[in-house]
Length: 404
Image 1: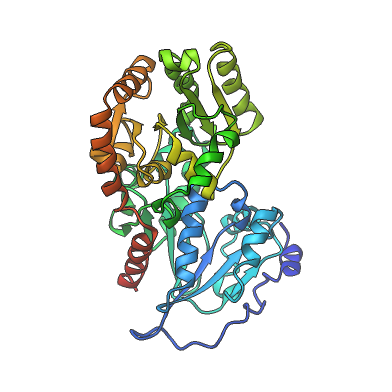
Image 2: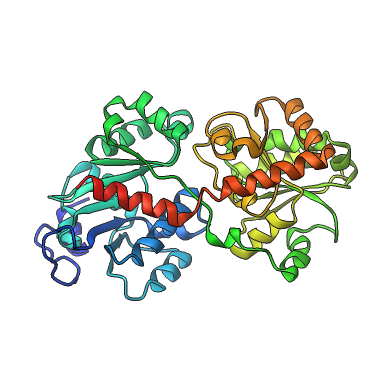
């Protein structure tokens, strides 16, 4: 990337920052000046990282004790553009370069500093592991899943995370499990970590309307009234969905078509193909559906009508669908490893995710014990109540303020 290209983007060292009101240096009574940097194109089929980012963005934008400015690279996806346009009066700037190209440049050259783009700031906040240069502003990044990057990511992932963590003044970790992996893999981070968890949107704590419930099976491609087990996850191999298909199909109800399995999510063609092959191998009577990605009220209805959420992930540092399902009063059957026992707590039904027979046995136990299912469902409501975005946002602002 040449200097000439940077000059055309408005990122050259002499470029004027985006227009914002003049603000005095931060004092106790002044709003916390935060510049948030995020790739808004990630709004297209948002994963947990993006849902975290948008939830924090929305709450930061409405806090009187925070003066927020938003920076994104050039957007090409319509969902990102629509969300961006909905922000109305929030000070923000879209750059000429795509976010990934901007981050690639910043890994090579630590300029222009964020203040050249956005003006003076107390913090530059990246709700992902972005390396963003600054002059005086402190840098905060969110660590979502260290183990995933180290176990399943390309070799360069460790170096990129190490660089972001090394230069960060504050690392926000979404779970105690992730914090331990951070300390094990990057010991120098230990004294710069704060716990700021994921959560479920307020929508999932509200009751699902009768009309939404009545239409959900048609949306999922199921016959009226048929019960179903639900998975909400992308189709990456670490989500362990092929084992789930085989384990669920060992239940007599699934094999006969009396209980369906619905896999909500999406993936690349090479991720979808083995799932469809696994489904095809089960037999024609089983009702196993892959209806695609869902969000908002449609996703809430899918939870509300489900017999249980099944989450067999091999590598998870939080698991937002677990909280969403519990908030809707749905039992959760979870892998007994990584962060899932921490998030599900006493409400979960647990199994070793690499053992298909154990997954089947756990689902059998859940289906056969209605009183215990009801008891754990009540526990799940209490557990989910601990994971609200307003609480997580308060924790974020408190962590930033404490380290000024």
